[in-house]
Length: 468
Image (cartoon, rainbow, N blue to C red; front, side):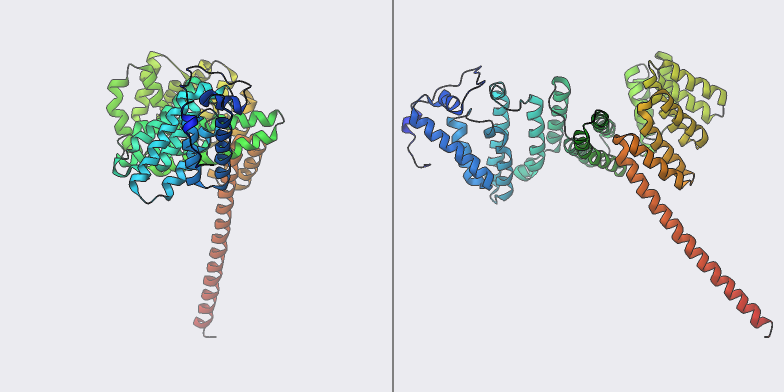
């Protein structure tokens, strides 16, 4: 069939309309739009569609490429799969090709395909079973670019272009809507951000810190949807979301912890230098406070300077907590409680007050005020029952810090049962505590064996020294 002449078809090819609507159309009608109503032309194109689908199913990438090339040129609206299924074909063609020039050719064609899909998206959506947005298309483009660009471009590859693709996709989905950004996408985006951070030797630290907060927050929001789904009785949906976002969230946390970006001395140096430029910008001040709070700089003088500057411009619970922590460090307990209470007053709802109580719990935990931390964890539940799981997880951490491992494990179980969004973290903490318990038991056993040996040795020495 592939050897059939296209002479009769070429005469029928027409220019695509700017705004065609294929709603409720048949494949024959969509083919005829480009080829005309010639029966042989439609039959030929349907044959290519069938072969395209078969070669895709058989993973015969080179044959699929021939079918794809024909369909893209002569029947671009035959089916959505021409656009949605072909990127994986280009991926394997690039990976399996030895000739660098051909790798580059395939890569360029892949990028052209994404551009063409964006151009034709409105038309494709008129007959697509699942509608797509430009953000969706850019998300897929970003991932495939990241998968193969370095191999295809060689020395021309620029990691910053990969980062830009991810950032543009996330921005477009956030602004214009689209399907959920998957956890794997967020994880890969943050990995790319980490690569750039490492390559620049920390030169993109502030952006990297923001990327960390954004990626983490996105995963946490999706896990919140899992909780809502579970409460509504849709356990399948809840488990799907948990499986999609919990592991990437853990990976993002691990990447960040290993990045070195949270080095206190360097962060203090960065925000000290930026203070004069930021001190009159409330948005910059609050953003910086959030980053410093998330990176254990609650006792740094520069953190207090930002809190004071922000509070002077527009008091908020964020800056009030900063001043409370400064008062706590200075031993001014009355003033500490005053600012903590002010933070609660500045919140607009009990839901927000519950979150503030968890923040206060964090601050007290870092200052080793464990009793107070447990008190505020409970207050968080009193203000907002939806925070029960998160509060229990805080209690588990606190009990682990003070060596109350049994209570810590119990709270891990309570946290997991109360809130699916923290179940992954709770299980990981439980495993860590159990390992610590096992290690502690092993050490105690070894210590007892050593003490018994010393006791026997001393008894033997006393026996011989007594001349018996």
